[in-house]
Length: 273
Image (cartoon, rainbow, N blue to C red; front, side, top):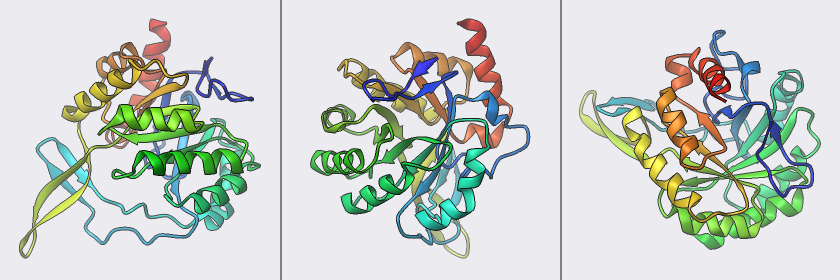
């Protein structure tokens, strides 16, 4: 078992280090049948905000030489509608559920954390920090979540300035750091006229950015669990992230391209161990 919330009064134990990142399966309902959720260590559901968000205008996805660029605008139903629709599913999924929060206002984060504290099946919260968030904003957000609820807290950080932000999140009370939010990218898309789509960039060629940020944060020896997130497409990349200091891995777009890969990776890492 792996504890992904060291220092927390109840911890957060997972059976294996392979996790599914927020957005990879929606709130647990949006996945191919070949994706064996019960074979994973945990599922991150969301993103969720206090109020509903319509999300980015269409089109939201365009191919790029490195893979693809996707901008959803954090579309979601809002906290209360999400719980009404998906909380019954989380209670019977057979895999630990971590809910990702995507607000940046401390008051909204606190209200979400309080409401989620007693939802069956939810074992932890993940806060996705905005790309431009300051260390002050990170500290305030972590403190708001930690004071409002009892669940372990993961903080998902951008790869840029990862060390400074990691230290701020840890000092404020984070139990784990997720390194990192998918890098921002852009791709040109031609329709009636060419235009640029800017959003999250996905592709195996971007993995070195995650690995670099992870290694930098691991060198700080902070008293938290480290989770490598995003753009992991091969067993070799997964092993590299674990060797660089990660305690667990979050898979994202690879679950859309090859739904059997997460289960296969979990089996490969178990055999190696």
